[in-house]
Image (tube, rainbow, N blue to C red; front, side, top):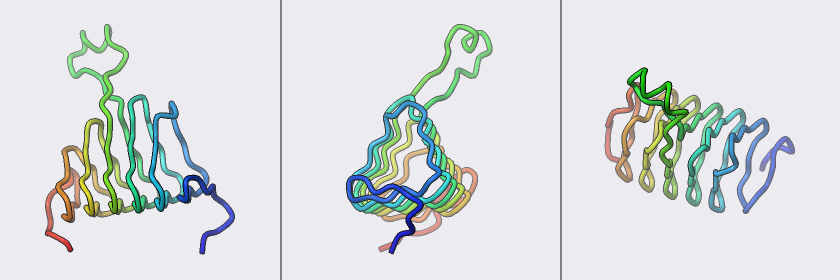
Length: 135
């Protein structure tokens, strides 16, 4: 079923290479994380049961102030990312800080997720926009 080039952990499968910044990423059982995913986890990234992340998905929890004077005085701002159960995230997707993707949602490949995603919906594009309800 799975190739030997990965890691089985918590009844989930992670395909190498996989990158973590601070080790604040957790995932529940039955999740599949494809190759070359990057987790900039300066804050918590929580991934639910039965999720699938395509290759090259990037999840960021760190950002910086927009005002240049604030950037000089502040190293970074963080916000957690939550991905609920049964979510499918297509390859090359970028998920920005503070986002919550609700149960059963699907994010099309190459999307940039900037806001919360409701349950059982398909979102696509840059920025990711609603396309349709799914069952």
